[in-house]
Each structure stands twice: as C-alpha cells, then as structure tokens.
Amino acid sequence: MLGHKARHLVRRQRQDGRTAPHTTMPSAAIELDAVDKSYGKRQILKGLRLSVPERSLFAFLGNNGHGKSTTIRLVTGLAAPDRGSIRVLGRDITCQRRQVLAQMGCLIEAPSAYPNLNAREFLGIGARLKDLPASEIDRALELVGLHPAPRQRIEHYSLGMRQRLALAHALLGRPRLLVLDEPTNGLDPDGIREIRALLSGLPEAADCTIFFASHYLDEVEKTATHLALLHEGRILLQASAAELERQLAGVLALDLDDAAQGARVLEAMGHVARTEGPHRVLVGGVDRELAGTVNSQLVQAGLVLYQSVLRKPTLEQWFLQMTAAEGASAC
Amino acid sequence: MLIRLCQVELLKLRRSLVLLTTVACPAAVVVLVYGMALRRITPEGMTAAQWSMLWGSASALWSLFMLPLYVGLCTALINGNEHRNHTWRLMLSLPIGRLELYAAKAMVSVLLLLGAQLALVLALGTGLLGLSGFPLDTALQAELPRLWAAPVAALPVVALQHALSWRLRSVVTPLAVSVVATLAAMQVGASPYWYWLPWAYPVAASNGGVESMRLMAVLGGAGLAALLFPLGAWWLSRREVA
Image (cartoon, rainbow over all chains, first blue to last red; front, side, top):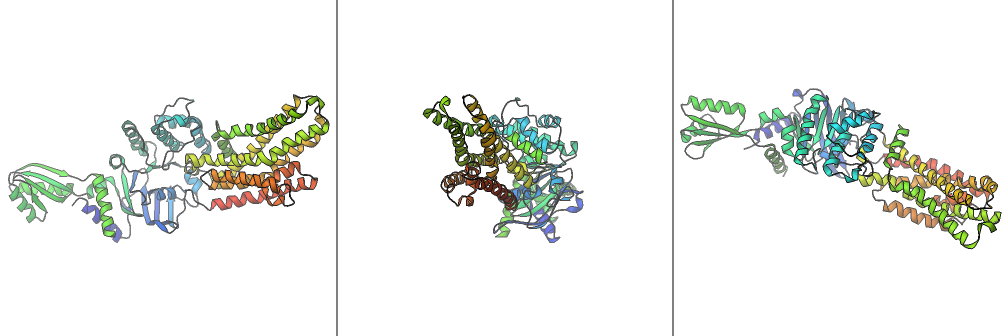
C-alpha cells in the first residue's frame, strides 16, 4: 500500500516522456538529457534525464552498480557520454570542462589524499591549481572543523579526518556546485551531524548547489531538498522533498467509539478501510490532505474521533518498495 | 598552468622515496666505482689514463645500468602515487587538462633525471677533489660534456616508462619492463643493433666508441622522444579515468 502514489507519479512521468517534474524547478545547475553510457557491452545508463535545480541540496539515490558513480563521473567530466547532452552550470561539460570545473568542488568516492603530505600541503594543491590565496586554505579547514597539527601527515589521520579534509578540498574557492559521493562515509555520529549541518546551510549561505550521492537514507531524509532515485540506469523518480512528502501515501490509524460503523462509513466513501479491534480503523492510501477530509467526514457522520495518526513510510521503506516494485515489473 | 602543475607534482614528492632515490642511485654508483678502483691502486700513483678510466667506469655503470633503472623507478613512483592513493579522480576533477597533467609528470620525471645526473657529477667531483693528481682539464673538456649526453639520450625511455606507469595501476609491470630492457641493453648495447633498443641509448651517448655513435644516440634519443611523448599522450587521452 505504501508508495503507490509515488509509483503512479513515476508512471505518469514516463507516459509524459520525462522523468523530472521540470515545471516546478528553477534553472538547473546540472541537466542531463537522454544520456547513454556503456562500458564494454554493459549499458550502465539508459536515456538518463536529470535536472538538479540551482541552490538545492540534491540527493542522488540508488543501489550499488545501478549507475550512480558513472553519472557522477559524467557530471565531473571524468568520462564522456555515448549519447545525450550534459550541461553543468549552464555549460556543456564535454566542451567546456575546465571552465565548469573551476566553479565546482568534487569529492568522488573514497576520500583520497597524499599520505606523505600534511593538510595544508594537500589543500595547497587545489588552491594552487585554482589560483586561490593561502587564506582560502584556512577558510576551508575552518568550514569543515578540521584543526590538524601543522606537521601531522595525512597518513596519521583517521578516516573521519580524511573525509573532512577531502570535503575541505572540495570547498576550496567557494564553488557554485559541490558534487559529493558519500560525504559522511566513515564519520562518527557527531561528525555526521556536523557535516549534515554544514551541508544544509551551504546552498543558502554560499549560494551553491550540492549534488550528493548517499546510501544513508536517514541522512538524505534530514538534509535533501530534492532527490532522484536511480535504478538500473534510469531515473525512477525525481522530485522535491516537499513534493515527495505530498505524494507519499500513508496509513491513517483512527481511534473511534465504534470502529465497525466507522469502517462502513469510510468504505461507503470509497476508502479501503480495515478494523483492528472495536475502536481502531486503518485506512490505506492516505496523504495529508485526504487525512483531513476523512477526519471531518467521520465527525460529520456522528462518530466520536479520539485520535487520528497518519503513518507515512520512511524514505528507506519508500526506497526499498520502489526498487523492489521496479525489479518485479522488469521481471 | 603547466608550471603550476609541475610545482604541484614536485610538492607531492615531499618526503617521498623518489627524492631519496634521486640522490641514492648516483651515490651508489660513485661509491661502487671508487671502492673498486681504490682497492687496486692508490690515488697518488694514478695516471691521466687511469683517471679517465675511473671516470668512464662511473659513467658507463650509470648510463648502462643505473640510469635506465632509475628512470623506471622514478616514473613508476610518480604515477604510482596517483594509482596507490586513488587520486586520479581528485586531480582530474580540478580545472586542469589530462594532457597537461601527463606533460607535467613527464617534465618532472625529466627534471628528476637531470637532478640525478647532477648528483652523479657532484658525487664524482667531490670524490675526485678529495684525491690528488686528478687532471681537472681533461675532466672539464672531455668527460663532463659526455656525461650530460646520457640524460638526453634517455628521453625516449622516460617517454615509454611514463606512458606505461600512467596506464598501469600496478608498479610491478613498468618496473619489470625496466629491468628486462636494461638487461637486454647490456647485451644489445655492444652490438651494431643497439639503436633498436632505446634503453641502450644512454650508454651509447656517454660511452660510445666513436663520435658518430655518441651523436646518433643523442640526436636519435631526442628525436624519438619528440615522437613518443605526443604519441603516448594521444594514446592515453583516449582512455577514461577508471
């Protein structure tokens, strides 16, 4: 029952020949149009369409091996598409790669660094190649809350420190677009909270867009303003968090004086209702608006409503259901 | 941008094995040659011809054996730095071109080769100055210019080893190629077919029996390198970052 409206949205988008509700989006920081990409005989991306609005915190979800990293490589110009166009910050990444990358910060897959260097030397690489002053290194370190001993080499850093350092590297030069692959990977709970708070504030504070891939759906739920679900090289759904919240149907649990009477009233109104004991009725496929209508209809029918709780699926439940349903339909 | 990239590549080598080998490889040659020579003769009793032979032995050992191995090791470590630390993506997601990075790494390899050559000359010179009876005129006029021919003739080896090390994740293959080719050069270097094997060029340039051979090794090396560097860049630019 959970998520059937979301699947309906997917079907509707497919019928319209698009996967993203472009009409509700402002100008795009990243725009992929009908992108195909294969490695050998294996087609990774199949007509991928994606639109990342400017100043959004865009979560890119998908299981391993379904094309997330390939998409990130294409967006950062590390690979070229077989077909289709990729525009990043208004420019074609395949033709104007350098101009685009000058305005971008990237953290791609594992936090990589040179273990024989210290943090300042490492950040000096990015600063020098982006033609930035040394003060920019201090700013980036301050932003991620990393205060290493001046002579401490990166080889002695914990994974969390390396992750912060890689993030600091990506933040050098106040980029307009941050592309991050698993930005909180390896961080402790406090670190995750700090990075989450940092990322949440960045789109507004630094006037930048953040496009990040993550497996932590809890993190995505708490931070993302928009999200897209990639499955087997295609976007299953792209929506803003608010849109998804509206679209996701839940279960309405009602405590009534007479559950049987309540169920009859609801079924007469066309709802799928089921009693659970003498006082409880569960109604499926309900969103926020419909929950309000159901409540008022029951009251108008003369029933006493003690409690009404709308249980929405978590993002994780939604994700698992969407990918499982798509897998089943593919079979 | 290329200069900045070279600076960055040099920055990456701080506290690395590459810098150590740049000094250690030529020093090992000098220590070995002096050790062997001084076991047989005393400095005071050496003739000009013997001094020249000592100088030539150092030059031959370096050009034939240590220099090609050093080039293999140096290029493998410079490129292996990116493979080992998974930093290709980090570098190539910065606003630089892949060809520029390729060129910068090649230039740093050449720079280090010149550094190693300078270390050899300084080590030889320091050792010689400590001894008496060394004919300085002969060294400056005849031997010293010859030593600088070896790195020029080694440029195609730099191009080949650099391309291999850039392309292959493991350092084992480039190093194995370096060892096998160096051993082959020891055999082929003395034959009339030496010019088929670039690893034999440095010793031909510095210790070739005739002037024409030395000249051919230098000019051939420079010409072949001018062909191999762009060819390697073109080959590798067609491949995507893994």
